[in-house]
Image 1 (tube, chains in turn green, brown):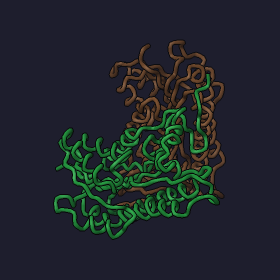
Image 2 (tube, rainbow over the protein chains, first blue to last red):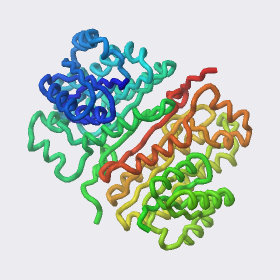
Image 3 (cartoon, chains in turn yellow, cyan):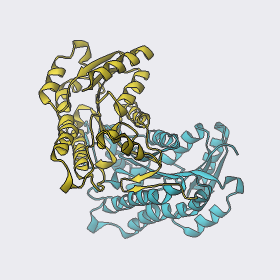
Image 4 (cartoon, chains in turn purple, cyan):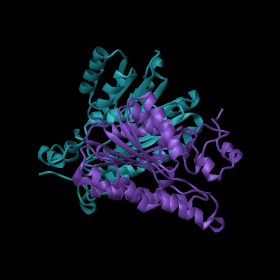
Length: 255
Length: 254
């Protein structure tokens, strides 16, 4: 039987690329996201191009009751979840703390921290009942460092890191693997969301260099989940070659 | 030579040896280095016989600057364009509380894990910078992320490797050189036998009741890091046995 992977934030970016890559590699998918239409579109595309079966769940990860309801109502044959990929997350505005909108902070904390924790809590009974269970949390370079304007975004991603580490200790006896994948700048809708839809600003963020592509991150996820059972990739930190770390961008290769 | 050249330090056993086999399989021509000349020569012959790549061995103690430099200077010209440097040579010696540690063992760890790594990198980096191409993969450890009891100095050396890796990345990415590290938890190699000066009983007790990592698991990870697309730099992979959550928490079925 094919393994089932549950991916949050599956309608775009890293989530979408991961869904496609896992489908190509023989996983069946539960795809969760807010945007129903995009999700259904992705489902038909995947089912057309691969043998994977896809089940869509439509909810806002910020709403704990909605998550619980959606998971409670999972059809019987979709309940043996092997892999949870906690991908849903966002960065909203990188203004200095004194100029930031408090609502942006709350949205980030409710999605990146509370959403991730809630869905993990709801799915743990399923994962603990399954062979070869694996939780993959998407962290960030911001799980490791802070840069100008990133205080709250970094705080949420530091929280993800602490949660990952704690989960790993608590689940040690249950043979559940826990991995965190930490990408640097990725060319996704992230920049567009960050600049609240300002396309010119979003494009200029990538003008001078090649960022990671969503598929690069998806491949790191696949590498982690395909290791032998006795191997747990705790953490992968990956960036494009123009980002040494969050505070050291390389503008061009020295001639 | 159309194949890329990889240099692996500490290639005579454990992770180094497994990586040599793996990279040979992937088509790298290999420079293998180590202290134990007999094992090194055997490995050189074995790789030449069993893989479709070229292999040359350099025999030196990475702690001895003169030995290292003389040996590197003798490297034939067709071997000069090293594309991949695997800084693997390293060791842990002793497990004593800090007030009871052996100064000689401390020096040996510091001279190998930190100074040896730096010295060989210094020999190879100028060429990489000139060619604007290259990839360094430093073998660190969970001990580079966390300190554990009775391991202060070993953990100190691996924390140093972690800092050196991060600094190298900032300095070298502008020159088109990738820098990565792999940080393993418990790997069943000769590591613990060396640490306990040949005491097999003590060494075996470390891995009893759990499935540790094997050298091949790390070699596979190194090969994966080296095979990423041109624009992707894997900064670090922390790889542990499923039965080991971190430096202090393991689950043993005894």
